[in-house]
Image 1 (cartoon, helix red, strand yellow):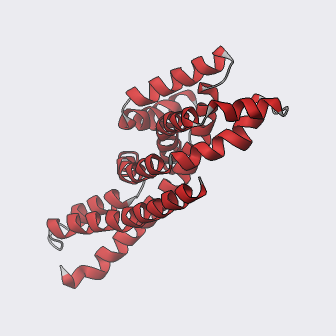
Image 2 (tube, one colour):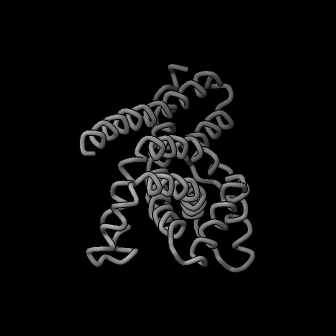
Image 3 (cartoon, rainbow, N blue to C red):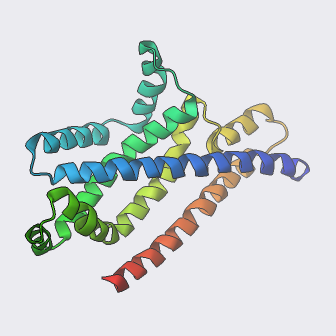
Length: 218
């Protein structure tokens, strides 16, 4: 194994880099869509609430793997062709957005109703009071669950190997398939586990720090 250590480190490094940037971009997409869903959930307009409820129900009850298959194999049938990494980001982002939206909605509901009434009394519209007063506080309230969603997203990103994205698990699979006589299986598995820890442990650390700072700010 040590004779080919450089080869393994190189493959794992490439896979780890793909895992990190695919996860980061997908989480940004999930935050944007999730914030919109949360606003629609608490909107006074019934159609907005119906759309948000339908979206959340759909994506929370369909497995991520099925969503990736539908995007990657289904949409090209109707003429929409994108690179696999773009489908990966769309799939991971839209799937995680349903959970982000629910998390933010619980954060919004935890804000005292008097603040919304005070915002309206100074002339702010519903959207303005959400954007400038309610949502910033809701984000601080839900930092721990958002952190859990981010670490879950890092692990879920391993599923995009099924549509050909060369992330960490895909690189490990390729390494084993192409070099069965040169690598010990357990060495590769432990290497993959170590790489996921390298990503998720710092995230957990910074989430705890952000949570403490948010508590002081409240």
